[in-house]
Length: 187
Image 1: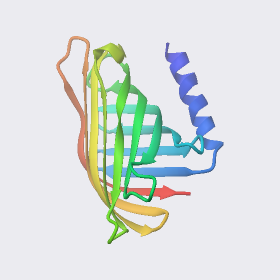
Image 2: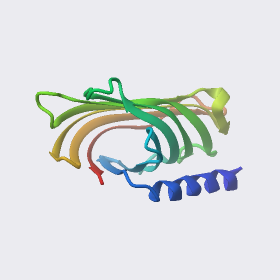
Image 3: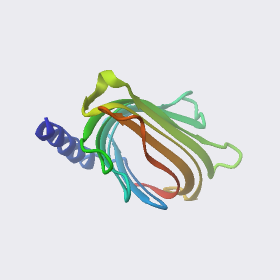
Image 4: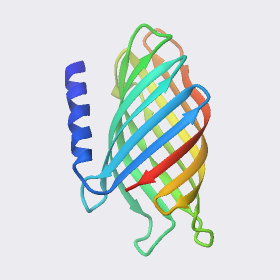
């Protein structure tokens, strides 16, 4: 199972690097660092992403995902939405087992029309027991952020991220709960 999961992760990562519209998001918290790379896979809004989060005291999480991205109104709406799924590979340090979950959810980004460099955004992914494998029983990840576009293709932001999961024979563990500073680059 681990070999298949790793192979899928590598295949989607290579496919994401082969396309044009790319995004690199790096953020740092007091005990956590995260890097995420996303790319448009089609001109109709399908996007793929790969990511990795390291928390010094509690967890390492890799993810690979597919989402459909678009705005709520084709005539220049300031809201951008993405819905889809992510496969999370979870390796907690305070638990003896690893887990894999399929989280469903999405994200949003809003850019103020009259102050078009200010943004707010957020994401939510949830995986109940039915789509949690190995030792994982459920998973929840959410974040909110506020940013400023220092360039049209570079946004500096501050935010908050929370990640929790439950594993076989354990209660829910908080794997990450931190304020963060990040840089989101588009190229």
